[in-house]
Each structure stands twice: as structure tokens, then as C-alpha cells.
Length: 158
Ligand SMILES: [Zn+2]
Image 1 (cartoon, rainbow, N blue to C red):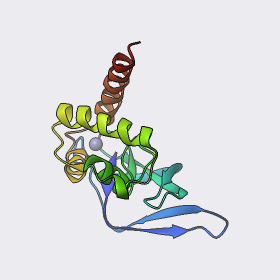
Image 2 (image 1 turned 30 degrees about the vertical axis):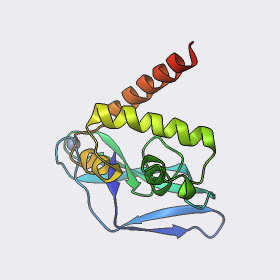
Image 3 (image 1 turned 45 degrees about the vertical axis):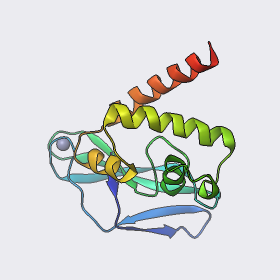
Image 4 (image 1 turned 90 degrees about the vertical axis):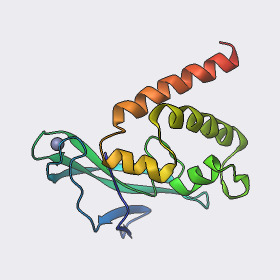
């Protein structure tokens, strides 16, 4: 995956699907090769005001190593449905600006505690930098979710 910060969300005429128009060109985080668009997929997101929206995310393929990367606008935090602004508020302990229920709030704080410790990510922005530098990968996210779920189950005592 690659994270972009220069983009525009363009709404398609039919409904609440937003196309991500990118104004930057990212290189493959694994090998530095150039990336070509090979398709797109839909991604659900809950905005900082709590509205559900759908984004059309481009799928990119590396011309050199062949790896497939999703091009994620930085409004998205990988593997989370809440937008990155909400995640940032949660991570900062800013409950007033975190539009989510109490359970999600606690779940994401716990997830971040584990994720940041294991990945060395200092902040949400730092996480994005590490993704684009190839330091944090899909595998890390999946691994951390497994760890997280194990921790949750331990806390629940089952
Ligand atoms: Zn590559």
C-alpha cells in the first residue's frame, strides 16, 4: 500500500461514491519501482463527522517487482473504517472529537498501544511515512490485528 496526501475527492454523479484524484506519484515501497494503475476497488469510510462514505481506491502494480499496492488517501487509516482524523483524536485521547461509540474508542486505543509499540510508529503521520518507506507493510498490519485480537481475548478471559 502507498499513502498519498495530495489528492482531491470527486463525487461521481450517481451517488455517494468518491473518486480519489491523485496529484502525486508514489514509488513502490518495496523496491522503488514505478507504479501503474491496474484497477480500483471500493472502500468504506466513516468521516470525522460520522457520515459513511464510499471511496474508489486505485490499485497499482509495481513495474519492477510486480507487487500490488492500494493507493490510500491519508483520510484513510489502513484496516480501519473510521477516518484518520477520528483515529488521531482517539490516539490523542481526545474523546470529544472522536465520533464513535465508547467500545470503538477503547478498542482503537488498545489497538494503537499494541501497534505503535510493535511497529515503532510514533504517530499516525509517522505510520504513513513508514508505509511509504516500506518499513510497515500489509503483513505488519495483519500481524498486529492478530496480536490485538489475542490481547482482547485474553482480557475477556477467553
Ligand atoms: Zn516494487
